[in-house]
Image 1 (cartoon, rainbow, N blue to C red):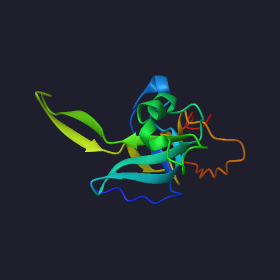
Image 2: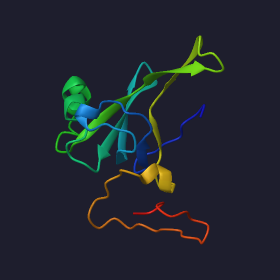
Image 3: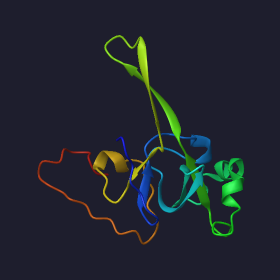
Length: 139
């Protein structure tokens, strides 16, 4: 996606494993709480993840953003641009770089995207089920 449009209050999911040890893994879900700018450009997206342990080390690394009064009493994690390298088929001798905020809107997710996700108590989940679903698609 060339342009990611977000606003405060948007439900988002990480689309890459940013740091598994820090619980910033693919499909970690949260809410956008703000944006931090440098020189007029968005430097990071401030996300409050559902799992409170997500981003502990990230918050320390980018403490200059987290210590601002509007975030101080919350587990807000700065998500910065991520440089992902992709091999180009067919021989994988060349590669392309995609530099982006590793986020996507998370209001609706497919069965494949929610595999391994944790949902907070009280979450409202709607399952669209059809006869075409294969055995094992839901467990």
